[in-house]
Image (tube, rainbow, N blue to C red; front, side):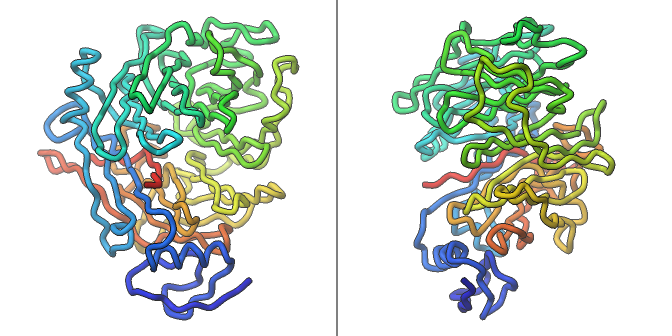
Length: 448
Protein backbone atom coordinates (compact mmCIF):
# COMPACT_ATOMS: atom_id res chain seq x y z
CA UNK A 1 0.00 0.00 0.00
CA UNK A 2 1.29 3.49 -0.87
CA UNK A 3 -0.33 6.39 0.87
CA UNK A 4 0.43 10.11 0.86
CA UNK A 5 0.17 11.96 4.16
CA UNK A 6 1.17 15.45 5.21
CA UNK A 7 3.62 16.22 8.01
CA UNK A 8 1.71 17.24 11.13
CA UNK A 9 4.56 19.11 12.79
CA UNK A 10 7.85 20.63 11.74
CA UNK A 11 11.26 19.34 12.76
CA UNK A 12 10.20 15.72 13.28
CA UNK A 13 11.92 12.82 11.55
CA UNK A 14 9.84 11.21 8.81
CA UNK A 15 10.48 7.48 8.78
CA UNK A 16 9.82 5.21 5.84
CA UNK A 17 9.41 8.22 3.59
CA UNK A 18 11.28 9.56 0.61
CA UNK A 19 11.75 13.14 1.89
CA UNK A 20 11.43 15.38 4.93
CA UNK A 21 8.58 17.39 3.48
CA UNK A 22 4.83 17.62 3.27
CA UNK A 23 3.33 15.06 0.93
CA UNK A 24 5.99 12.43 1.59
CA UNK A 25 5.29 8.98 0.21
CA UNK A 26 4.85 6.24 2.81
CA UNK A 27 5.59 2.68 1.77
CA UNK A 28 3.59 0.52 4.17
CA UNK A 29 0.85 0.49 6.77
CA UNK A 30 3.40 -0.32 9.48
CA UNK A 31 5.59 2.65 8.62
CA UNK A 32 2.58 4.96 8.43
CA UNK A 33 1.56 3.86 11.94
CA UNK A 34 5.06 4.72 13.11
CA UNK A 35 4.82 8.24 11.65
CA UNK A 36 1.38 8.82 13.17
CA UNK A 37 2.66 7.62 16.56
CA UNK A 38 5.56 10.07 16.42
CA UNK A 39 3.29 13.00 15.60
CA UNK A 40 0.29 12.40 17.81
CA UNK A 41 1.81 10.79 20.88
CA UNK A 42 0.08 7.47 20.26
CA UNK A 43 2.06 4.26 20.35
CA UNK A 44 4.35 3.18 23.17
CA UNK A 45 6.44 5.77 24.95
CA UNK A 46 10.12 4.87 25.01
CA UNK A 47 13.64 6.08 25.67
CA UNK A 48 17.08 5.24 24.28
CA UNK A 49 19.97 4.39 26.61
CA UNK A 50 23.49 4.96 25.24
CA UNK A 51 26.67 3.95 27.10
CA UNK A 52 29.77 6.14 26.88
CA UNK A 53 32.79 3.99 27.74
CA UNK A 54 35.12 6.89 28.52
CA UNK A 55 36.08 7.58 32.13
CA UNK A 56 34.26 10.15 34.21
CA UNK A 57 36.02 13.49 34.43
CA UNK A 58 39.22 13.39 36.48
CA UNK A 59 39.14 9.71 37.44
CA UNK A 60 40.18 6.41 35.87
CA UNK A 61 36.78 4.74 36.20
CA UNK A 62 33.10 5.54 35.89
CA UNK A 63 31.69 6.45 32.50
CA UNK A 64 28.17 7.58 31.69
CA UNK A 65 24.75 6.52 30.47
CA UNK A 66 22.98 9.03 28.20
CA UNK A 67 19.20 8.58 28.21
CA UNK A 68 17.12 10.21 25.46
CA UNK A 69 13.36 10.51 25.85
CA UNK A 70 11.10 10.06 22.83
CA UNK A 71 10.32 13.76 22.90
CA UNK A 72 14.02 14.68 23.00
CA UNK A 73 14.73 12.47 19.99
CA UNK A 74 12.40 14.63 17.88
CA UNK A 75 14.43 17.78 18.54
CA UNK A 76 16.98 19.22 16.14
CA UNK A 77 19.69 18.81 18.80
CA UNK A 78 18.56 16.05 21.17
CA UNK A 79 19.54 16.53 24.83
CA UNK A 80 19.99 13.54 27.13
CA UNK A 81 19.60 12.85 30.81
CA UNK A 82 23.08 11.78 31.96
CA UNK A 83 23.84 9.19 34.64
CA UNK A 84 27.42 9.62 35.91
CA UNK A 85 28.69 6.14 36.76
CA UNK A 86 31.45 7.55 38.98
CA UNK A 87 28.82 8.53 41.56
CA UNK A 88 26.30 6.10 43.09
CA UNK A 89 27.30 3.20 40.83
CA UNK A 90 30.96 3.35 41.80
CA UNK A 91 30.09 3.73 45.49
CA UNK A 92 27.91 0.63 45.34
CA UNK A 93 30.53 -1.43 43.52
CA UNK A 94 33.31 -0.29 45.83
CA UNK A 95 31.27 -1.36 48.83
CA UNK A 96 30.10 -4.65 47.31
CA UNK A 97 33.29 -5.81 45.58
CA UNK A 98 36.14 -3.66 46.88
CA UNK A 99 36.90 -2.25 43.42
CA UNK A 100 35.51 0.49 41.17
CA UNK A 101 33.79 -0.46 37.88
CA UNK A 102 35.86 0.36 34.80
CA UNK A 103 34.75 0.81 31.19
CA UNK A 104 30.99 0.33 30.82
CA UNK A 105 30.47 -1.58 27.61
CA UNK A 106 27.12 -3.20 26.79
CA UNK A 107 23.62 -2.72 28.18
CA UNK A 108 20.41 -4.79 28.08
CA UNK A 109 17.00 -4.66 29.74
CA UNK A 110 15.04 -7.25 31.66
CA UNK A 111 12.01 -8.69 29.91
CA UNK A 112 9.61 -6.35 31.74
CA UNK A 113 11.93 -3.39 31.05
CA UNK A 114 12.04 -2.65 34.78
CA UNK A 115 15.82 -3.10 35.05
CA UNK A 116 18.94 -2.34 33.04
CA UNK A 117 21.95 -4.68 33.08
CA UNK A 118 25.29 -3.00 32.39
CA UNK A 119 28.60 -4.84 31.94
CA UNK A 120 32.02 -3.31 32.61
CA UNK A 121 34.53 -4.91 30.27
CA UNK A 122 37.77 -3.81 31.94
CA UNK A 123 36.95 -4.65 35.56
CA UNK A 124 34.45 -7.51 35.25
CA UNK A 125 31.60 -5.78 37.06
CA UNK A 126 27.91 -6.25 36.26
CA UNK A 127 25.58 -3.56 37.60
CA UNK A 128 21.80 -3.82 37.67
CA UNK A 129 19.78 -0.59 37.69
CA UNK A 130 16.19 0.23 38.48
CA UNK A 131 15.35 1.55 35.02
CA UNK A 132 12.70 3.97 36.25
CA UNK A 133 14.70 5.65 39.01
CA UNK A 134 18.13 5.13 37.29
CA UNK A 135 19.47 3.95 40.66
CA UNK A 136 21.90 1.01 40.84
CA UNK A 137 20.44 -1.79 42.96
CA UNK A 138 23.14 -4.47 42.70
CA UNK A 139 26.80 -4.75 41.74
CA UNK A 140 28.54 -8.08 41.17
CA UNK A 141 31.95 -9.03 39.79
CA UNK A 142 32.97 -11.98 37.62
CA UNK A 143 35.43 -14.57 38.91
CA UNK A 144 39.14 -14.61 38.03
CA UNK A 145 39.83 -16.88 35.07
CA UNK A 146 42.87 -17.47 32.87
CA UNK A 147 45.86 -15.65 34.35
CA UNK A 148 43.60 -14.07 36.97
CA UNK A 149 41.74 -12.09 34.29
CA UNK A 150 38.15 -11.09 34.95
CA UNK A 151 36.01 -9.23 32.45
CA UNK A 152 32.35 -8.76 31.67
CA UNK A 153 32.20 -8.08 27.96
CA UNK A 154 28.47 -8.69 27.83
CA UNK A 155 25.88 -9.57 30.48
CA UNK A 156 22.65 -10.70 28.83
CA UNK A 157 19.41 -11.29 30.77
CA UNK A 158 17.35 -14.27 29.64
CA UNK A 159 13.92 -13.59 28.15
CA UNK A 160 12.36 -15.37 31.15
CA UNK A 161 14.35 -13.08 33.52
CA UNK A 162 15.62 -16.04 35.55
CA UNK A 163 19.31 -15.56 34.84
CA UNK A 164 21.91 -13.22 33.36
CA UNK A 165 24.57 -14.81 31.16
CA UNK A 166 28.01 -13.21 31.52
CA UNK A 167 30.82 -13.43 28.97
CA UNK A 168 33.99 -13.22 31.08
CA UNK A 169 36.10 -12.52 28.01
CA UNK A 170 39.79 -12.63 28.97
CA UNK A 171 39.01 -14.96 31.86
CA UNK A 172 37.64 -17.36 29.22
CA UNK A 173 34.67 -18.28 31.38
CA UNK A 174 30.94 -18.30 30.74
CA UNK A 175 29.21 -17.38 33.99
CA UNK A 176 25.66 -17.12 35.26
CA UNK A 177 23.95 -14.72 37.61
CA UNK A 178 20.74 -16.17 39.02
CA UNK A 179 18.21 -13.33 38.97
CA UNK A 180 14.91 -12.30 40.49
CA UNK A 181 14.16 -8.84 39.13
CA UNK A 182 10.94 -8.50 41.11
CA UNK A 183 12.78 -9.06 44.39
CA UNK A 184 15.99 -7.27 43.33
CA UNK A 185 18.09 -10.34 44.18
CA UNK A 186 21.05 -11.31 42.00
CA UNK A 187 23.66 -13.98 42.74
CA UNK A 188 26.67 -15.26 40.82
CA UNK A 189 26.48 -19.07 40.87
CA UNK A 190 30.08 -20.35 40.70
CA UNK A 191 28.88 -23.92 40.25
CA UNK A 192 27.13 -22.95 37.00
CA UNK A 193 30.22 -21.57 35.22
CA UNK A 194 31.96 -23.19 32.24
CA UNK A 195 35.75 -23.00 32.02
CA UNK A 196 36.07 -22.65 28.26
CA UNK A 197 39.76 -23.59 28.27
CA UNK A 198 39.44 -26.79 30.28
CA UNK A 199 36.03 -28.16 29.33
CA UNK A 200 35.14 -30.97 26.93
CA UNK A 201 32.57 -30.82 24.12
CA UNK A 202 29.71 -33.31 23.61
CA UNK A 203 31.88 -35.16 21.05
CA UNK A 204 34.67 -35.54 23.59
CA UNK A 205 36.98 -32.97 22.00
CA UNK A 206 38.80 -30.34 24.06
CA UNK A 207 36.89 -27.07 24.08
CA UNK A 208 40.00 -25.03 23.32
CA UNK A 209 42.56 -26.46 20.91
CA UNK A 210 44.68 -24.83 18.16
CA UNK A 211 43.09 -26.85 15.39
CA UNK A 212 39.44 -26.35 16.35
CA UNK A 213 39.02 -23.32 18.63
CA UNK A 214 42.33 -21.58 19.37
CA UNK A 215 41.05 -18.73 21.56
CA UNK A 216 37.90 -19.37 23.58
CA UNK A 217 37.36 -15.90 24.95
CA UNK A 218 33.55 -15.58 24.93
CA UNK A 219 32.36 -12.44 23.18
CA UNK A 220 28.56 -12.30 23.06
CA UNK A 221 25.98 -14.79 24.39
CA UNK A 222 22.85 -14.71 22.22
CA UNK A 223 19.98 -16.18 24.25
CA UNK A 224 17.02 -17.53 22.28
CA UNK A 225 13.43 -16.62 23.09
CA UNK A 226 12.85 -19.87 25.01
CA UNK A 227 15.75 -19.09 27.38
CA UNK A 228 16.87 -22.70 26.84
CA UNK A 229 19.80 -22.06 24.50
CA UNK A 230 22.52 -19.45 24.14
CA UNK A 231 24.74 -19.11 21.08
CA UNK A 232 28.16 -18.06 22.40
CA UNK A 233 30.61 -16.50 19.96
CA UNK A 234 34.36 -16.97 20.51
CA UNK A 235 37.20 -14.58 19.83
CA UNK A 236 39.40 -17.07 17.96
CA UNK A 237 36.65 -18.76 15.95
CA UNK A 238 34.16 -21.51 16.55
CA UNK A 239 30.96 -21.28 18.55
CA UNK A 240 29.19 -23.11 21.36
CA UNK A 241 25.47 -23.52 21.90
CA UNK A 242 24.94 -23.75 25.66
CA UNK A 243 22.07 -24.78 27.91
CA UNK A 244 22.24 -22.12 30.65
CA UNK A 245 19.37 -23.59 32.70
CA UNK A 246 21.32 -26.48 34.24
CA UNK A 247 24.08 -26.44 36.84
CA UNK A 248 26.78 -26.55 35.72
CA UNK A 249 25.79 -25.06 32.38
CA UNK A 250 26.20 -27.52 29.53
CA UNK A 251 27.46 -27.29 25.94
CA UNK A 252 24.90 -28.88 23.62
CA UNK A 253 26.38 -28.03 20.21
CA UNK A 254 29.93 -27.35 19.04
CA UNK A 255 31.33 -25.56 16.00
CA UNK A 256 34.94 -25.14 14.91
CA UNK A 257 36.74 -22.18 13.35
CA UNK A 258 36.42 -23.63 9.85
CA UNK A 259 32.62 -23.42 10.21
CA UNK A 260 32.17 -20.21 12.21
CA UNK A 261 34.86 -17.58 12.13
CA UNK A 262 35.88 -15.50 15.12
CA UNK A 263 35.01 -12.38 17.01
CA UNK A 264 31.29 -12.23 16.31
CA UNK A 265 29.30 -9.80 18.43
CA UNK A 266 26.01 -9.43 16.65
CA UNK A 267 22.99 -11.66 16.50
CA UNK A 268 19.23 -11.68 16.12
CA UNK A 269 16.53 -14.31 16.30
CA UNK A 270 13.97 -14.34 13.50
CA UNK A 271 11.36 -17.08 13.54
CA UNK A 272 13.16 -20.41 13.92
CA UNK A 273 16.54 -18.93 12.97
CA UNK A 274 19.35 -17.30 14.90
CA UNK A 275 21.55 -14.95 12.91
CA UNK A 276 25.14 -14.66 14.13
CA UNK A 277 27.96 -12.60 12.66
CA UNK A 278 31.76 -12.77 12.69
CA UNK A 279 33.88 -9.66 12.59
CA UNK A 280 37.33 -8.16 12.55
CA UNK A 281 38.50 -5.47 14.88
CA UNK A 282 41.36 -7.31 16.57
CA UNK A 283 45.07 -6.80 15.96
CA UNK A 284 45.45 -10.30 14.56
CA UNK A 285 42.33 -10.12 12.40
CA UNK A 286 41.53 -6.57 11.39
CA UNK A 287 39.05 -7.18 8.61
CA UNK A 288 36.20 -9.69 8.38
CA UNK A 289 32.47 -9.73 7.67
CA UNK A 290 30.40 -12.90 7.92
CA UNK A 291 26.72 -13.53 8.60
CA UNK A 292 25.49 -17.04 9.50
CA UNK A 293 21.99 -18.41 9.94
CA UNK A 294 21.36 -21.26 12.40
CA UNK A 295 18.21 -23.37 12.78
CA UNK A 296 17.42 -23.06 16.47
CA UNK A 297 15.02 -26.00 16.56
CA UNK A 298 17.63 -28.37 15.11
CA UNK A 299 20.14 -27.90 17.94
CA UNK A 300 20.56 -31.19 19.86
CA UNK A 301 23.33 -32.60 22.03
CA UNK A 302 23.21 -35.80 19.95
CA UNK A 303 24.32 -33.93 16.83
CA UNK A 304 27.78 -34.39 15.39
CA UNK A 305 30.21 -31.45 15.54
CA UNK A 306 29.23 -28.55 13.25
CA UNK A 307 25.64 -29.79 12.96
CA UNK A 308 23.19 -28.43 12.14
CA UNK A 309 25.52 -26.63 9.78
CA UNK A 310 24.73 -22.91 9.52
CA UNK A 311 23.88 -21.25 6.25
CA UNK A 312 26.53 -18.73 5.23
CA UNK A 313 24.36 -15.75 4.32
CA UNK A 314 27.25 -13.49 3.39
CA UNK A 315 31.03 -13.37 3.68
CA UNK A 316 33.61 -10.74 2.73
CA UNK A 317 37.09 -10.19 4.08
CA UNK A 318 38.68 -8.81 0.93
CA UNK A 319 37.93 -5.19 1.74
CA UNK A 320 38.21 -3.19 4.93
CA UNK A 321 35.34 -4.81 6.86
CA UNK A 322 34.20 -5.34 10.45
CA UNK A 323 30.74 -6.73 11.13
CA UNK A 324 29.43 -5.69 14.52
CA UNK A 325 25.96 -4.70 15.77
CA UNK A 326 22.73 -6.15 14.36
CA UNK A 327 19.03 -5.31 14.44
CA UNK A 328 15.88 -6.62 12.80
CA UNK A 329 13.28 -4.31 11.29
CA UNK A 330 9.76 -4.00 12.69
CA UNK A 331 8.25 -6.46 10.21
CA UNK A 332 11.04 -9.01 10.86
CA UNK A 333 11.84 -9.06 7.16
CA UNK A 334 15.19 -7.29 7.09
CA UNK A 335 18.37 -7.74 9.09
CA UNK A 336 20.68 -4.74 9.48
CA UNK A 337 24.36 -5.39 10.28
CA UNK A 338 26.67 -2.46 11.04
CA UNK A 339 30.16 -2.34 9.56
CA UNK A 340 32.48 -0.17 11.63
CA UNK A 341 35.35 -0.29 9.16
CA UNK A 342 33.47 0.32 5.90
CA UNK A 343 31.11 2.92 7.44
CA UNK A 344 27.91 1.30 6.22
CA UNK A 345 25.06 -0.96 7.20
CA UNK A 346 24.51 -4.16 5.26
CA UNK A 347 20.88 -5.20 4.76
CA UNK A 348 19.69 -8.80 4.28
CA UNK A 349 16.25 -10.15 3.41
CA UNK A 350 15.40 -12.70 6.12
CA UNK A 351 13.01 -14.57 3.82
CA UNK A 352 15.44 -15.14 0.96
CA UNK A 353 18.85 -14.43 2.61
CA UNK A 354 19.52 -12.05 -0.28
CA UNK A 355 21.89 -9.18 0.29
CA UNK A 356 20.34 -5.81 -0.56
CA UNK A 357 22.11 -2.52 -1.33
CA UNK A 358 24.00 -1.36 1.77
CA UNK A 359 23.12 1.85 3.58
CA UNK A 360 26.00 4.36 3.44
CA UNK A 361 26.68 6.18 6.70
CA UNK A 362 29.22 8.77 5.49
CA UNK A 363 27.57 12.03 4.50
CA UNK A 364 27.11 15.69 5.39
CA UNK A 365 26.65 14.87 9.09
CA UNK A 366 29.78 12.74 9.50
CA UNK A 367 32.87 11.97 7.45
CA UNK A 368 33.72 8.92 9.61
CA UNK A 369 30.73 7.81 11.69
CA UNK A 370 31.96 4.26 12.54
CA UNK A 371 28.54 2.68 13.27
CA UNK A 372 28.79 0.25 16.16
CA UNK A 373 25.66 -1.14 17.84
CA UNK A 374 22.02 -0.47 16.97
CA UNK A 375 18.45 -0.91 18.14
CA UNK A 376 15.05 -0.06 16.67
CA UNK A 377 12.16 2.08 17.91
CA UNK A 378 9.08 0.11 19.00
CA UNK A 379 7.00 1.28 16.03
CA UNK A 380 9.83 0.43 13.62
CA UNK A 381 10.11 3.91 12.10
CA UNK A 382 13.52 4.84 13.54
CA UNK A 383 16.82 3.02 14.00
CA UNK A 384 19.29 4.22 16.63
CA UNK A 385 23.02 3.64 16.12
CA UNK A 386 25.99 4.40 18.37
CA UNK A 387 28.88 6.16 16.62
CA UNK A 388 32.42 5.77 17.96
CA UNK A 389 34.83 8.48 19.03
CA UNK A 390 38.35 9.55 18.02
CA UNK A 391 39.94 7.65 20.93
CA UNK A 392 38.19 4.25 21.05
CA UNK A 393 38.58 2.15 24.18
CA UNK A 394 37.52 -1.19 22.66
CA UNK A 395 38.18 -2.84 19.31
CA UNK A 396 41.34 -2.16 17.37
CA UNK A 397 41.69 1.58 16.61
CA UNK A 398 42.10 0.80 12.91
CA UNK A 399 38.39 -0.04 12.72
CA UNK A 400 36.88 1.58 15.82
CA UNK A 401 38.02 5.18 15.44
CA UNK A 402 35.27 7.64 14.50
CA UNK A 403 35.00 11.39 14.11
CA UNK A 404 31.51 12.11 15.49
CA UNK A 405 30.90 10.31 18.81
CA UNK A 406 27.21 10.15 19.54
CA UNK A 407 23.85 8.67 18.64
CA UNK A 408 22.74 8.52 15.02
CA UNK A 409 18.97 8.77 14.57
CA UNK A 410 18.04 7.07 11.30
CA UNK A 411 14.80 6.87 9.40
CA UNK A 412 13.81 3.35 8.38
CA UNK A 413 12.71 3.50 4.77
CA UNK A 414 11.02 1.23 2.24
CA UNK A 415 9.68 -1.00 5.06
CA UNK A 416 13.24 -1.66 6.23
CA UNK A 417 15.11 -2.19 2.98
CA UNK A 418 16.93 1.10 3.43
CA UNK A 419 17.44 4.07 5.72
CA UNK A 420 19.28 7.34 6.24
CA UNK A 421 20.80 9.37 9.06
CA UNK A 422 18.51 12.27 9.92
CA UNK A 423 20.48 13.75 12.82
CA UNK A 424 23.31 12.94 15.22
CA UNK A 425 22.99 13.61 18.93
CA UNK A 426 26.60 14.40 19.76
CA UNK A 427 28.17 13.03 22.95
CA UNK A 428 31.25 14.77 24.30
CA UNK A 429 33.68 14.13 27.16
CA UNK A 430 36.68 16.45 26.81
CA UNK A 431 39.51 15.92 29.29
CA UNK A 432 41.67 18.59 30.92
CA UNK A 433 44.10 18.47 28.00
CA UNK A 434 41.33 19.29 25.55
CA UNK A 435 41.17 15.76 24.10
CA UNK A 436 37.79 14.29 23.15
CA UNK A 437 37.43 11.01 25.05
CA UNK A 438 33.78 10.15 24.42
CA UNK A 439 33.36 6.64 23.00
CA UNK A 440 29.72 5.51 22.72
CA UNK A 441 29.17 1.76 22.46
CA UNK A 442 26.27 -0.01 24.20
CA UNK A 443 22.71 0.96 23.23
CA UNK A 444 19.22 -0.26 23.99
CA UNK A 445 15.69 1.03 23.49
CA UNK A 446 13.49 0.81 26.57
CA UNK A 447 9.72 0.81 26.18
CA UNK A 448 8.35 2.65 29.22
